[in-house]
Amino acid sequence: MSAGIPLADAVELRRRARPARLLTVLLAAAAIGCAVAALLVARSPRTRTLVPLGRNANAVLVLDLSASISADTFSRISATLRALAESSGHFALVVFSDIAYEALPPGTPAVDLTPLIRFFTLPPQRDSQAGLNFPANPWADTFTGGTSISSGMQIALQIALAQQPRPTVVLVSDLDDDPGDLPALAGVLAEDRSDNVPVRLVGLSPAPEDVAFFTAALGADARVTYAPTLDQAAPRQTTPFPWALVALTLLAAVTLGLREGWAPKLDWRRS
Image (cartoon, rainbow, N blue to C red; front, side, top):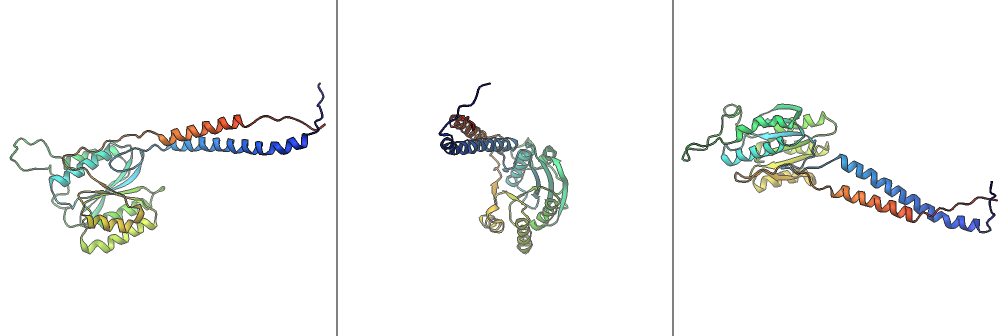
């Protein structure tokens, strides 16, 4: 058994070793923090769709059926439904005109929106001179009357408040509300803000003044996306390159390298 060799400068070396030890601890903590952050980023992938929602988003879709019956408006609704149906999310569906009701319950898979697309899609036209005739839909004769956006948003708010975490409310509308309904609508949007219910807007050719109303009511959280026009293809779901994950991984590697380079092992003991 070898005996330790007394070192006259042990106290001075111990004092100098403390900053190096502190730097080693800080670098190790930084590396661990980057690794944890990278793990969290990897568990929450984002996709780019017509509506900026997460891959497995939980949302309440509020569909305006009081809009003018036109090829342009219906085609925009069709493109929006198609984009959402191709996602991996889950939706409740609320439809409204001057009244509203829950058409699909919370947690419905996105693919279940697919059957609705046909009601807003023009079939092939045999006669080019014929008018644009959309398939008959369940709401055309008895439901599409006036406009009460507040009725649809109120039901969506009730659905959102019953869930944790809060789902995103996605309003698909031309945003043109009946003037008499605006005070009630402003009240519902204020409740969304106070209850931290995120709201996203998909505009069906909305007028600037209607967009301004919603932007003012929702504040900084207002996000307006415009549905594609008749001659535009709906954006398909894509997964962006994970730059944040790459940056965190590189940062973790750098901190580990610095730790190894700045961590000389000092080993002594008292005589």
